[in-house]
Image (cartoon, rainbow, N blue to C red; front, side, top):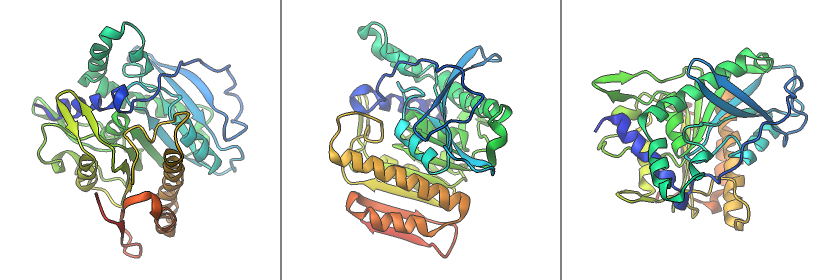
Length: 340
């Protein structure tokens, strides 16, 4: 089995019973792109189209409400299987409130459209969305969306040295591919890395079925990474089982530094996804995720190393494990509680 196909089998890890994004209808907002977004909870929907691939690339842009004249950092977000640009609105709003723009990309071949149609054909649609062609298209979506944003009127306001990529499940796989994961096809290594991504936020990163050693696949991911998972982040699909330990294996194999691992105590594969009517602990995990993602970005982009230590101390009751493996000797390695 090729490494790429092994990657793609993990896309099935986001089936609805195990945490796919809620299906959200996509409607383009009125054309108001001439003005910066007025508030942190506002979002600008844009219907972009990649003519070279004949593929629509809908996006949602969150922008800091009171951005200074200085360019702002940017996070490009990739949703999981069955998600949309509306996924992770809470993160987008939080990042905007903290001074970070975020561009949420919708992957039309593996988005919320998989939930529409004959329910008896659902598994077939999910399998089609997990094909290697779609995985490559998802990485191309990120590149096209970033190209388009930087070439437009908002582009001059983005700090090109402070761009991160984030993703959940299939989106985390997409982020890994875009930041240097090395996959082979017919004996050749595919060059998918976009060097503009200087950091990655990986929520519930899937495993690599068929690969006994993740090192050769992930050693090429040399950017700083934040890994988020839970003690109950178990993914079960007929024929495939992925325990939470697989998320730890991905963390260990990634080659970059600094890298941070947060294992929340409790919470399923879907805990990071925006959902209504959840209990208090999932809400606290999401709030902790919001705060940690900002602490990580500030550490990577602004060299404020103490923010990661402070976050670990403040959120210890939520955690089963917390590890910081930093490039800076002053920060060192921090462990909270014990790894699951």
